[in-house]
Structures are given as structure tokens and as C-alpha cells.
Image 1 (spheres, rainbow, N blue to C red):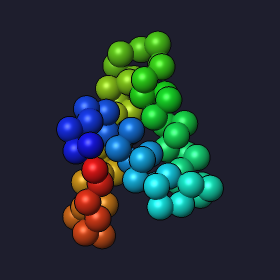
Image 2: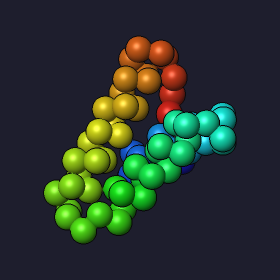
Image 3: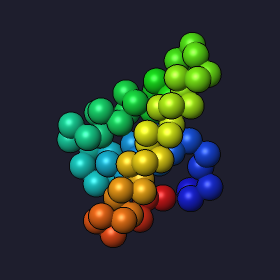
Image 4: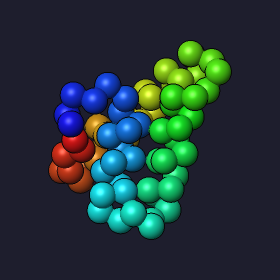
Length: 67
């Protein structure tokens, strides 16, 4: 699971595994969808970069490993 290329999928899976009905799960489900379905490759790339930043924040600030 660590090798997933889309960081938005990894963040979504992290939040939905721990609390499936949470706002974070719903938010990152939408973000993941946008990171795959947006018409613009540049926008998809920017969305994925934001998700990667979120993963890094979770690891650095909270010590959470997102797989």
C-alpha cells in the first residue's frame, strides 16, 4: 500500500480507515476524485502535491505514518 502513486488516495484511505463517517474522510474522498478526474493535468498535479504535503505534515507534526 505504501507504493500507491496517488497521495490523495493514501490520505483518503488513512482518514476513512480510522473514522469512515468523519468530515476528513468525506473531504479527502472528494479530493481524491478530483485528483483523478479533473480535466486539467496541471490541476491534478497540484491537487496531488497538496495531498503529499498533508502526508508530510502528518508524519512530521503528528508522527503518523500514512500508507
